[in-house]
Image (tube, rainbow, N blue to C red; front, side, top):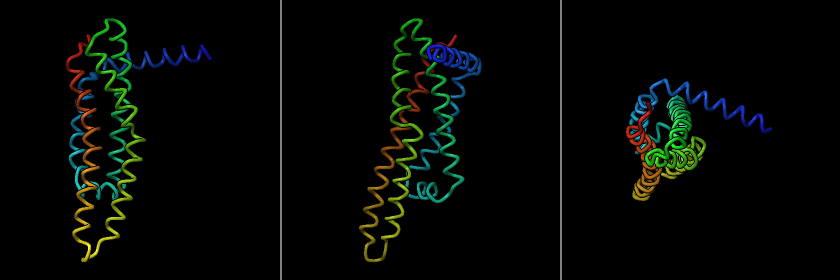
Length: 171
């Protein structure tokens, strides 16, 4: 068991080292821009409706989040190495933000949240008729408010990690 842990640790270190040669700052920048564009689209009724109804769009968005989490995990190992070496304050802040993104806003958590939102969207649409138009509009505003809050939280975490890495020296 101990040997397995050592082997896994070594594998992660090698993976992190080999991916360090890839310009991780550039990769994170590109993923951040892609997420920011996707998040803008998801922040309103039409965008979430398209997400809920279009498998291709859902798959694309989930794939993007998976890729973000993959590279954040890689970044985590690189920054951990930096922090272990010199106790860099920026590295410590970066690690905290990555941990928060990876735990509170994991792809699985996003899927759970968004599937509830899609269910709520269906209930709102199914309940709509001409007599209940005001309630419908109120439900849509409430729905969008919750959605925007969640999407903004993810976006903030992704953007702040991107900002941190520009202050770290990866020589």
